[in-house]
Length: 112
Image: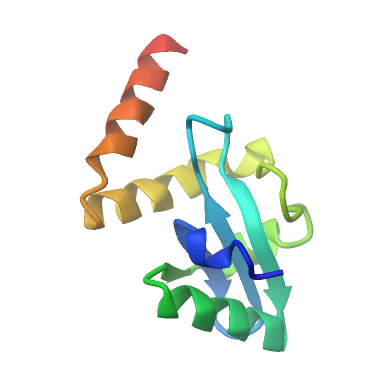
């Protein structure tokens, strides 16, 4: 369940009830992948494990509620969420000075 959670780029949460751990690796996937998700106690554990490993948790109730039933662990997020998740990831990558991923994303947008 949380074996890959510490590798997440971000955790999108509805403060206490839902958590979705997401990672984007443009070398492996065309979209962000769900590493873990959980409700209630499991959601709190996902957030705790993530934060203990330096993963930022972003509180976004509407997005967490919309994503939770449609996202599956080990799968790419549905296309409907690309824009919202991309905005969050860009914020995280800028905050963490992850220029490598930001540059690759720009290149992918130019190529695509």
